[in-house]
Length: 58
Image (cartoon, rainbow, N blue to C red; front, top):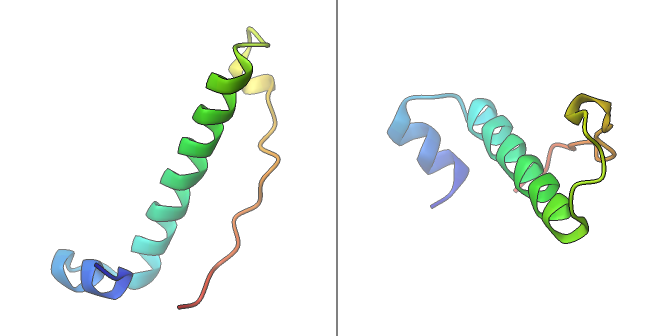
């Protein structure tokens, strides 16, 4: 299902759908990175997010 189809079905803007997908992918990537490396810091806010999210056109 395309982002446009999701936006139409849920009555949201395509931009909102793109942002939520990007946020979910980033959280998934960070979780997987932590799982592979194991916990290294006790303060989760101390870890910087090294990835910037760029808008991807279809």
